[in-house]
Amino acid sequence: MERKVMIANSKGMRAEVCTLGATLVSLFFKDKNGVEKDLVLGYDNPADYLNHTTYFGATVGRNGNRIKNGKFTLNGTEYLLEKNDGENNLHSGSKGLCYKEWEVEKETENSVTLSSVSKDLEQGFPGTMTAKVTYAIGEDNALSIDYEAVSDKDTVANFTNHSYFNLGGHDSGTMVNQKLKLYSSKFTPVDGTLIPTGELRDVKGTPMDFTEFKAIGKEIDAEDEQLKFGGGYDHNFIVDGKGYRLMAEAVSEDTGIHMKAYTDAPAVQFYAGNFIKKQVGKGGCAYDDRHGFCLESQYCPDAVNNPTFESPILKAGETYRTRTVYQFSID
Ligand code: GLA
Image (cartoon, rainbow, N blue to C red; front, top):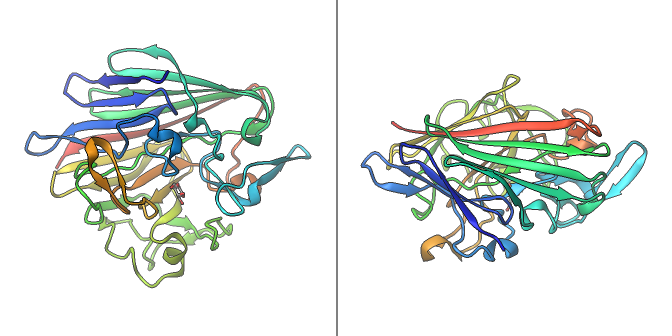
């Protein structure tokens, strides 16, 4: 039976994680007036997380984002995945780890570690894999998410968190006036099915340029082929530099809440919630498209099929580790 675990720091920042899908269901932080806001979209009823395809707060694995034609070849063997997004595999299919019950391994006041074992060929991926995710809230008001995975065969490991942030509060409506800065000078253009073509394109001179703070909605509906394909932003940006570094910042002028996001992953999917359907969210509030944005740290989509991208292959017996941090302050 699923349960929710509350974690908090001594400053009053707190978060709730559900064992179903190791999902981040809420994230509370006080705004410039001292009013507590819940900054992520989600549902009250855990069962709703079983039916959704929006991936609110989900731990996505074993592979985040798309794999072209739902297949790849590794060590001479072809592996077939579910085609749950047209001809492609998205977020590891309808049996992804976000629909499974995770076990709580360790719980402290400010952190929780959950684990999940997926069997050889579960979701179609080779190797029995043990995955762990740790959520922790530091005294610096940073929510860190650390992933670890080990497999007994060479396989794909590319975990991410799919939280939809709204720095005005999850129930405050559209987030298009919130400002975003991405530490990315290049993105990976996609075809009409949102699979990267392999090109690395400069953001300069295109609506993809977030190298200076810009309202998310400023150019989201511009006449631009890439934006048309995604119905708005739904693109993979290469995070400048290597190692653990800043990947993005965002701010709401209404609440003064400022978020800085860090990762050691090569890239980040900036998704503007274009496909959120009208629905009822936490506390009975109404969600609609663009009520939240995602910054999903990851290997490039379809990297397993695309030699131009850094490889997402985890070797048998080796440990995959990656960390993403969302830190909050008031401007
Ligand atoms: C990712 C994808 C989007 C969409 C969402 C889930 O961010 O890139 O196209 O499928 O997940 O709704």
